Image 1 (cartoon, one colour):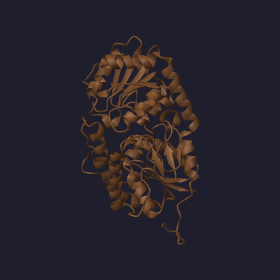
Image 2: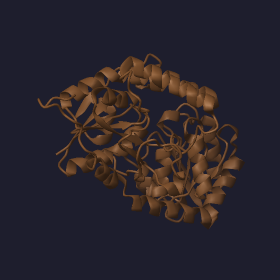
Image 3: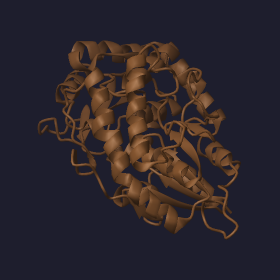
Image 4: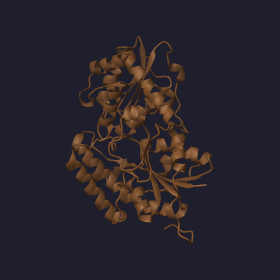
Length: 401
């Protein structure tokens, strides 16, 4: 039996892929535990998951998530991501990660790429660790051609290592030298360009949520296509014009489709329920994708991969962070159409939607990627690669280094 500690940030999209991996390792007789936000992990992994709380959050955060202006784009968004999110999060999590290690005594840490504290603590304590890469932007050359940005990020990581890690360490905390689990495939992401450690493309880890929200399934019309519109939970305050444009485009096509719009921020006005567009704060995304004909989204990696897992083509409207990279991958693979989030109109979203619904090439490309996902193995393959990692060395007295 091996003991695995999963270190995750307080972000749904970074916990979800590891839920199935932890469940599979537990089913194989291994011990698993989490270091992260207890309420979020319990909601996604189940109340029986063992969680060591990493409760400290930076002052720039509200309700466990970063406080970020909806207008941030491009370099400003990248600056915020590192200076106001990743680095403060690592500093806040590091003491609690050390406590989790002392109490759980793991053989291996499984560290989300944005939970940098986990990698630095593992390096400092001489523990073996694997990277969980929920997006491929970091290792497919997203920063190629931007040496100043790359050097700036490296400088931030060096300073962070001085404060919470091993000053003599050399590993890039974004890339484990032991194992990098990429929850995608080369058919979508393209080949790895800059991963310094062994990378394994395992495809998305699709696991049913322990508590899926209720949904009026009788509302769905089998004679019309179903389109899911979602901007994810981290963009709940940014998308009112976009969602309104989507609604208008859907209503113009109500003779052949219905739309389900996820609106967790309550951005849309109080609308009278009708048979054409259903607006809900939370939707059972996986169950809906099994019945959907198209998805309109922000190019979040999880949403894109979950849609393509079901062979559903996508209209992608990237907002910031890794989303433009993921959107580019979708278009390059032929599995969808890209639109501009900040300049969207009902006409533009309608044209893109017509393209993915009417051109069979988009659905064929989505199904090709879906096949690659299933071949890659998802949570089962990730668990097998983790099992193959040698456990961390222990001292002769049985204690951690």
